[in-house]
Image (cartoon, rainbow, N blue to C red; front, side):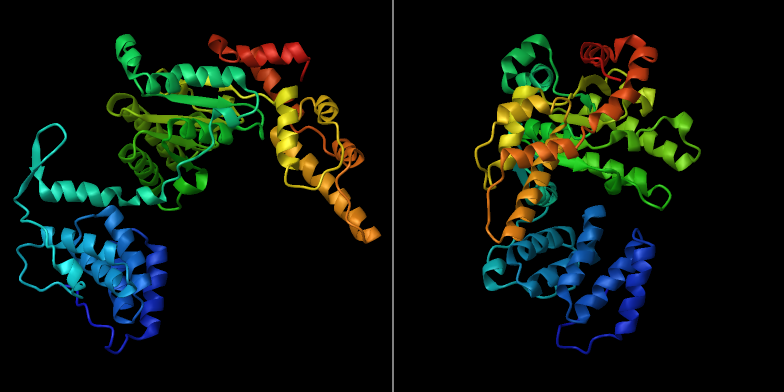
Length: 436
């Protein structure tokens, strides 16, 4: 049994704690090592650090008695009474046969309402009874909901992209908002959709808008959230991400730069990279067959680099081209980025006409560059002045559209690798505007 001492005792040698911290950094999955470190941190009057390490263990092993003891004591010492109360209930439910008294007794208000016996039965929504511990464990696992993003932007905040918004409404938003029609036509809420196109055109913002439209939770996952130097850890990280999203359905899981996680296995020389691709395929299959309300959105600038298995029906079986904003959308984007700056008389319509082919990110840079021009002139003259039409026109001359190089590359794939017509939309746009 791990010994828990009271804060008044003599702390351990700090060099021991430093050595343990180094060891935990080198072996983050070593539960015993991390638990020992958390215990010593608690004995050394560092309850916040102890709680952090104990929480890492509980995220992997919610029923780890020793980690629960450390976390409950640390939460009490840090004044987090709500968390201490929840941990105490879970600890008493799990450790009901133990004669060892619980460490760091909670305040009287907490102790006044102990949990019922573990064998008690509670009804669920479907009328089926379950152990109170099972219900409480699900409650504890849902406590991380406070850390989940709930976007407030909706599709109405997205300028242009009418065809993309129509497809999103048909494939997911419409069925979610009309459950009777969904059941009538046998439409499920499962599946994945891939957004592709030149960089800076709003793929990430569009994904947030989908979540905001549904008032759903939003998880954005990048390469740094998954890849790890330790063998097998990347696959586990990816699985944990999907499990977290499933617990919070309805949910939009956004995989940014998905080609970095799902690169063609034929282009990967190491088995570790191929294993990550296989794990992603497995998770998408699980989403398709087992989960309602989990919608996976992927974004990539290079769909031709994706493993073909990812685009198989049931995975990322639908692809939407996210193009640079049209004239009206460019005018709206310019207005948005200028609204909190001092601006003189400007003709946004003329500026929008002159920025054909600019991405949303390019237009933001135009406004930033124009603001720098006005700021520089104000410093030199000693008198602040607003942004002018000339500042914006100068910025347009300096900032070139970043989408053209992408279209030059994409043109070859659209013309010579358009298997099954997957790039028909892209090819039509390139021909219409004579790009590439």
